[in-house]
Length: 345
Image (tube, rainbow, N blue to C red; front, side, top):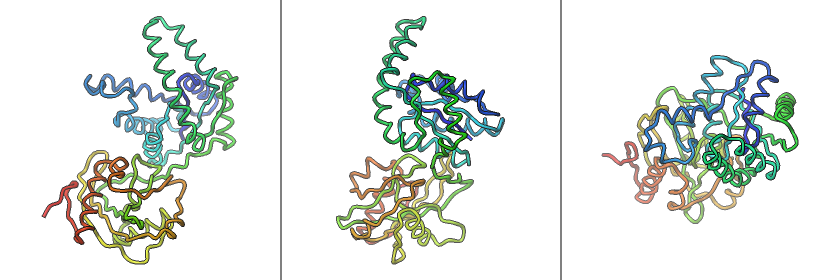
């Protein structure tokens, strides 16, 4: 199990985590900031200069998951992780990766009053030996208070929120330990999708509204939007798998087997194994049907009908290329064969 302590810079995450490991039996402290420092030594300066925050490095997010899993495999028990996470897609990616390894996450957010938070940051900067460096750090932390406040909307729905304005680190740790023990800090509801061990076959389904827009869903367990669909189970017909996934994900039962639009071979890209990706035309979804869409809260957080241009801002590049060719295949009434997003044959 992981107890993830979130909060703005200056909220007391690290000091609380240090106290917490003394309160939770068989617990170990893991600070992902150390992983960020390690990347400073590994990456070329040019790559480091491209990001303002090491969290923006996909390598950091993968290493956090891998390091946490390796630590738990080595020492067992509970991992206490103090780390600010205010970008929901990064939370999805990290917590989804942990869930795929069957690692339960209890998410706690420390949310002191903003006035107290700013006073803590100023006090911490005043005690530094390097005044100029301390001032730069202070300004950096202050600039991130507003984004954190903006993120509190989804954080409050996802995590156990604790106002530690009047609490010492020891008292905050006691409150966190009690919340975990009492079940107030419940396991985070990120779907546990097992990681593939080899190439996979996946089926996606495009569903269109009366304006010829198509449906995208927003998974909680990985970044970016996606088509309804999923991995084809052993012995399952791909088109039927797409129909099953549509029913499981959005509660809609398709009346007819969807028509194949394209087959795309996705190349292996570690840690992924690649495989075949199929996209089907699920037909038009009348507005009355769309009104009955039901999302499983642990797996999907939202859905939207979008245009091709809108999808360019929502889909990862590999899925957007696949979508564009699927729409062309639908217009032409044909089936396309793609290799890594490029038509062949």
